[in-house]
Image 1 (cartoon, rainbow, N blue to C red):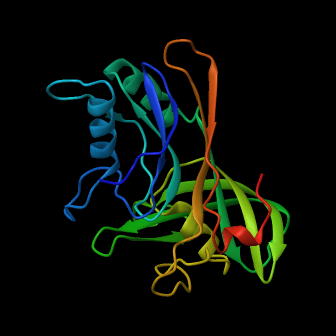
Image 2 (cartoon, one colour):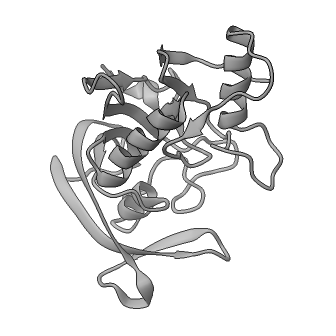
Length: 223
């Protein structure tokens, strides 16, 4: 089992660094998943007999790493899930994209998913049941034809960041589904920061996680 990097923990919540290429929860691949890892960590650390509770409150796509919150009680799970669904939480991502875009911007599209291919495409209207998607971004740095971008998600659609940038001819580096990624490359998308209101104290809780010190991230100075 992969070791778990715990970023923050109390009696109600645990924030971890989700490893890249690990599913959020068990799927047909049968590969080790985040929820199972968290349960095993709690069981071992606190020497708990029997089943251990760990509640999923949000997801990250399998290739994406970074900060992720898991609830340790059902009450915490319910309260944090409401924040995620109601958009009172804040998710900040970092990405390295190909090319150069204007310094800041708001990307708005309607996204429609094809479940047969597990791909999403952008269009201009709601035809076919497409769902509204929006994100704002800020270009932090540019180098060697690449741009480091800070992204704030306003909606949480499948493959949203990847599709919205790719549809504007600025795909994410290493994305072999929507861009020019090559075998062995890791998509440059990272869940950098997550802010929620604590389920019991109500205080704003912000947890950050820096991306790995490897290409293309190490081409840029990241605070």
